[in-house]
Length: 120
Image (cartoon, rainbow, N blue to C red; front, side, top):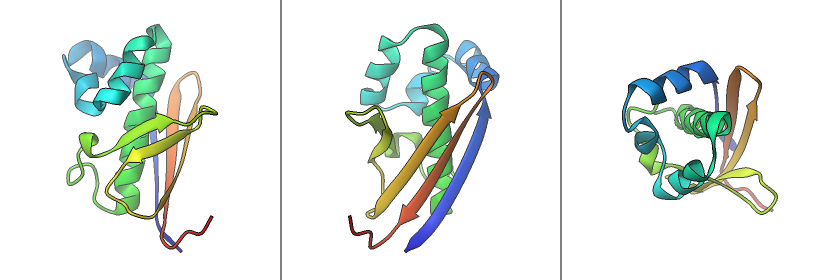
């Protein structure tokens, strides 16, 4: 049964601006494992990665109904599986979490669906 759905969209320019103006912005948003991947990327790809994680975590908090104020960025971790698909490797939700992240040249969007009693 679906118990929550959250969507977020961010302008890549906003994330770029935050990185340039706020020291430690990426560190505040990303976990240690996410930071490892972030550090291995260069230029625009780094901003796309960070924006994708930001948007995914915002969408998750909306699906939970808490907003990011009650749920910290460090409470959530988004990694990639062997095929490159993003997934939540860390979250407070015990059911199935469905995640999709998509980019254009200007925006990133993420959609999160929370499902209880999921049977594979």
